[in-house]
Length: 316
Image (cartoon, rainbow, N blue to C red; front, side, top):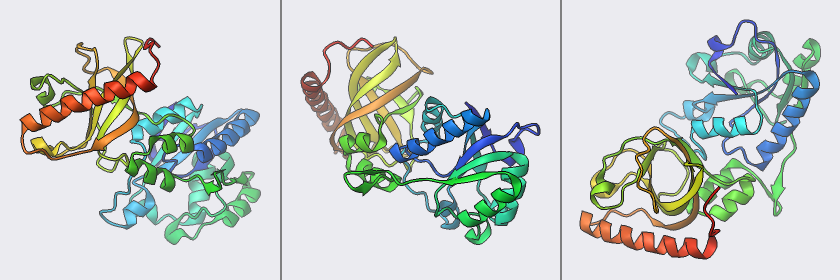
């Protein structure tokens, strides 16, 4: 999958595409329905299936200091889009100048001239352009004039509730993983390259592999039983901490994972970590010794849970 960051990075000879526009946080079952429709239209027309999004999100830009919770970091959104068969992921930098683009200019200059969009899928409540003056009706009007088909999307529901990123963020904030996976239509995973941490876990006999997370990740801070994939073509299990590590005066959000029955140096390797069960909230302990005792208990509790719920054969 190609990732294009910004208008100026769209190739001058871009061959055209079938596109959709949105936040696509979570890539849940509703999003997947849109992308299935998108891919079918792209294959029929022999064009690229393209997802257009923004960073920051428009409402984050207009509400200064607002950083709404995200289901996935950008790297995981890109990973899932590639897995779902999207050809191009275009991320426009949403800033003051971009916010001042007139709705008609956005359609004519960016969608039609630069991207050569021939088929566009959006929600019928989609608004865009300066002061949100553009809407579905304008897209249809300009599309008819310039040979771009504009199609709306249908709502997807589960248990009579509309599937939305908002509902999934709420479930993530509660650590409700079974609901999250059901709404997503895939297992919730966080991925990245293993980076060096502070090596405090090593001094406590609980060395961890560390992934950096954005501060606005929606997943509840705390301790989880997790599944780890990407190391030695095997599936491992472990105990993971999501949070800022208040006991050691941490400042950045991390996913720190102690992998059971594993003692290799794996800095720089790419892994996926799947939270399986929320164990307890993040705590600020009175001392390192108290924290170490709790880590030991967490690991014992997680091993017991894994032995009762997970396959015995760990090879993948």
